[in-house]
Image (cartoon, rainbow over all chains, first blue to last red; front, side, top):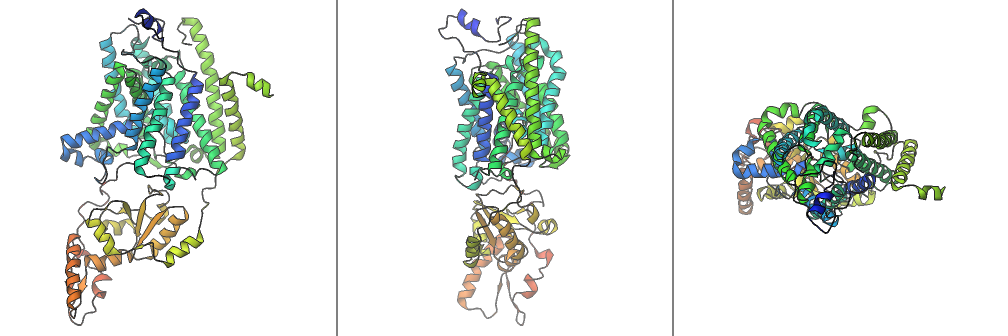
Length: 190
Length: 200
Length: 220
């Protein structure tokens, strides 16, 4: 049971008698500065920004090719991620980057004692409901990200700092869409 | 000259190593920011914790200023940095859909990976959701293709679009970000007094 | 001033720095002149003289048969010409779009046009913008047609020439060409290669524009 006021799981951990308390999250501006430097180094070294959803597309496209090769070959969307067959589609920049993200998240979480098997949810919903919402939300997001050609990292963050028109239009729409429906699903979070 | 990769300082295989290292930095920063936690991310949409806005805009401002000044000094060839084409309608509609998914699911693709690696079950389920969503999009692609490729405006940037100098737009973005930060700080204070739901 | 700055919280320091850089940026205006090019004239002249940057059509044909893929083949001709016939694996990029295309500075690029003129110009454009591996297909499409698609064997060929032609024939057939013997009295190449019969051009296996897509390199 999550306590009503605690956004952090500090109390829960104490109750379970753990020795380490999770540290509070860092100053958002300092984190943002750090994130900006990571993004900048991607620009300077690679000439491209960050991303996340592209890695999922690659995996889905490769999966489809394994299951139904003819079907995948007919689809322009999958083809874009499979390539012309001259290179292994899994040798993909974004895929390796995302593997790094998983590792980096784990390192940071371990250092701050924030690694924990749990489900993040508001106090008024069951774990089951929350997981259903997570799946539905993820599906909607996967669809939207592909339609927009990018996600929050690939389009809003990267396109935003490159001052791309599409990136900014996308970013404002994300916030717009979010705020428009936030009221209706407040039970999940508040 | 930067970007190094485009000037052949290293090959494709090494670029994957770079990808992994940059990814570690990315994941580390996201976790530090609390983005492995769906409640913090969702809080953005209920105004009681504006971390998403703060981290995201600080990152954008930092990288934007870096790009501007590196290019001004002459270390970076900005024209070689990849900027995706603008497809204005699909991107606006896609953004709205993604925003809805964000509030319902609690993550965006990048943060869900961090959340999964920090052991959050909802993060793992969310990733499965994304895979399913991409699959649905892929299967529907023949129907969507026309819309997906519509309103292509090419490589447009805000300076091109607004007819302002690059530096002017940089200044406006910085000013807007600082204004948003001030408003966010003020708003959080007011809301936490009211509801006792403050976060920091 | 310095003390005052140091006493501020980290967030405020960041904010002030950003504001300052933002204001300066406004006065700088545009950070770079995008039209600036760098020309190493000597290196360029040398490589032109030494013919290092030329690739024979037969060499290219050989690479394509072996499915070598460490290069990008660029067709500089018009869309119409490209859709009628193009060398397998090529991409159609017009000369004015070269710099904005997906071509990478560190990849091997082989250019061809109708003949050598467009590719020589494109070669200069790319070289002066710091593209490293730019090559010209010698003879362009005309050369390809003459040597690969419609090779001809002279009537009075020596046995060596004939055996070499047999090899050429295999290559030609691979690309759907029609190797032929020159009839007597006919100047060996002129009629066929300069004004090739469009019907006899090999049919494109992939519909124009729907070429095998290269793996998405950048973007989400």
